[in-house]
Length: 264
Image 1: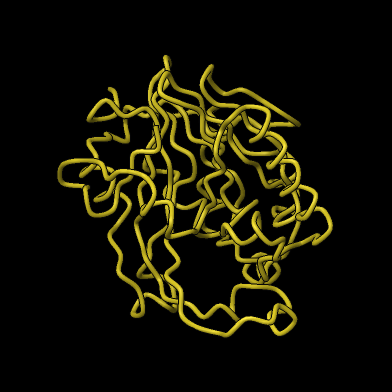
Image 2: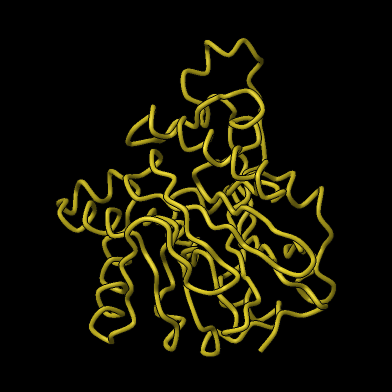
């Protein structure tokens, strides 16, 4: 199975939510800018590799969110089907971190190896259910990951790691203790999938912080690291939740055209 339309790296946006700037940027009052609405997409990514398609993050069931009524969404299975991706044929799943909007639906990929940072998983499984939920983690998603472990498909990653020749997991902690970014390579270009190490371009352009982090200083260092990697490799940074990615890159032709983007 290959990605459609000759694409090598794509972004699938399964939800779009309207939020206030003051709700997403840390210490907003100090930034000196007017408040206002912005559109925040929720996405996952797919990389075509010699070993098969690797999915980066797995989304979640949007109707479970308290803000579902304020968003435009489609289910992750629907999004994958429209993009021509059969979950049972996916060879690998990279979970950049375990927040609810990135680590659901692991059970959709029964034949994929599941890669997650050891520091990330160890942090959350040693927290109470209340602490997990307060930290934006759905305990049910941890159950799915435990099932993958029992099936022998879970790979705990320590440091940099290459699940495939076309994907390198890079530690970028701060948003969460084990946050990862993914350097994706392809014949048509490299892309640095930041996930939530960089939510929005403003974090790169102005140094503004996103509101949610477990270690603010580590988050700042990780943004700097990704900027250096981007410069060294020529791979543009793809933030995890910025609407401009879909404005700056072409749509994937076909049934997923309205929400799928060709990154390379």
